[in-house]
Every structure is written in structure tokens, then in C-alpha cells.
Amino acid sequence: MSETKAVQRFKRKITVENLWMYIIKILAAGKPLKAYEVKKKLEELDIKPATITVYIVLYKMTREGLLETVSLGGETLYRPTEKGLKALSEAKNILEWARRILG
Image (cartoon, rainbow, N blue to C red; front, side, top):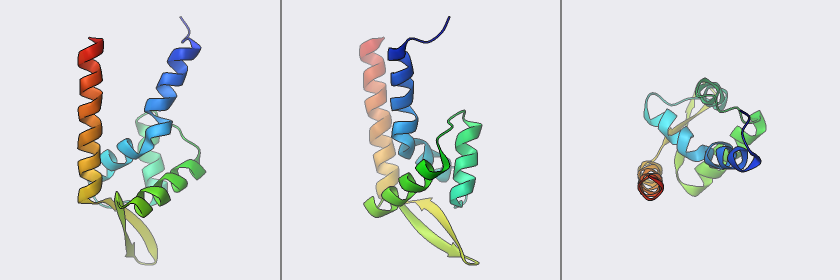
């Protein structure tokens, strides 16, 4: 059975349109990563945003203070900040709240 358009929109909204949650989760689980490595980890989760989308989201997250950058050998690596970890926790609480309502 194919997904309805409503389900397709919902899936996109909780994945590609909210990449920041998955990015923080990925970065919190290990060492700082390059943007390309973040994209590969997203793909391993079966989330396949365009490469430029990942770079834009990383830039916006850094600007918002959810991530910080680390320079290593001329490369830029990303890691979550306390603010980013707190935002992820709040987002997870909202998702849990929705799950309880929807059953």
C-alpha cells in the first residue's frame, strides 16, 4: 500500500524539515564530525536530504547556538552545545506528548 500524500508530508516534516534534531542526536553520540560525515550518518538513518540542505541546516544551527565548530587540520567539525542538547530534549518531550495524545 502506498503512502498517502498526508503521510508523505508528515514524514518529510519530521525528518528533512527538522534535521536539527537528528543532527544533534548524531553528534551527541560521538566525536565531532565534518558536514559530509553528518550527511552520511543521516543517510544511514534513511534520511536523505540534499547535501546543500545539510550544510544550510548546520550553518543555521551554529548561528543559533545549537552547535559549535571546531577546527582540526584546516577542517571544520561540528559538535552540539548544551543549548542544542537541551533543545533536543525539549523536542523529544513534545514528540512524547504527541504520542500520548495520539495513542
